[in-house]
Amino acid sequence: MNEQRAPKKPGGTRTPAPRSKPARQTLSREAWIAAARKVLEKRGIGEVKIDRLARQLKVTRGSFYFHFASLADLRGGLLQEWRDSNCAPFWAMREIREIDGLQFFTDIVHVWVDEAPFSPLLDLAVRDWSRTSKKLAQEVKEIDDLRIELLIRSFRAMGYSEDESIVRARITYFHQIGQYALSFKEDPVVRRRYQPLFGEVLLGPLVQEPGTAVKSGDSRGSR
Figure 1: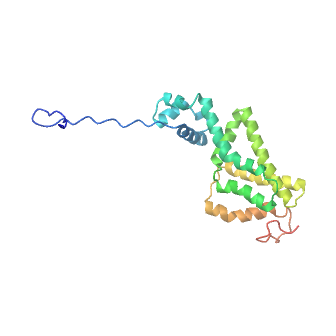
Figure 2: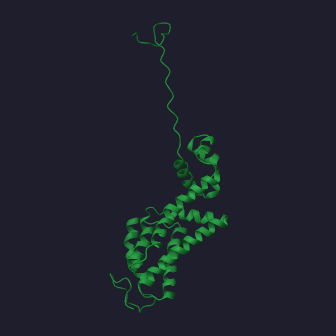
Figure 3: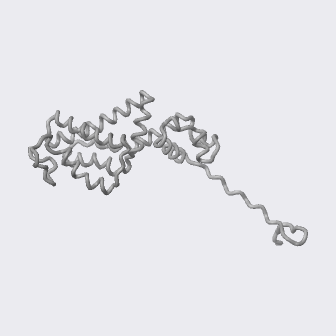
């Protein structure tokens, strides 16, 4: 069989065969959501727009509608990301019946500290978003209530009174949310080094005599 060759130009040089275009990659639904999430976390829900995302991803607007029925559909995907990473760990804890108070408290705190899969940026972004939606505001309130309820359970299991458990739970939670709201950043190594001290403050006596700091290893201190 004769080998097919490209025709020669005058003078004996051969015309290069045309190169085939690389196959166009199709973005997945997850890729769109990931891009939208970055915009949400940096600039807010108002900046999550189809045309802007399409330009950023270098695809056509039609590519968006291959995966989503509407912008609301994309927003629903973003909220599901938040539910899966920032709500599901606490929903799972709600189902635990028998708890050790101190261990339960530690497990709750580690959801925030480990950030796997919990995302502070996403939590704060959704909280800001909820200010424009009564339905979402209610959902955010419900997860806030659940997180505080879990903290109250941990303090009650440690033997604190109901009122004191509520106050300690609120101090713990407000401190955590406040840290995100202030965009306070700290090296993870340093944060973990301070963690036992935070535990002593949050779990120790509400009032103690000067110079009687809680001893390391006794998270609650003397009562």
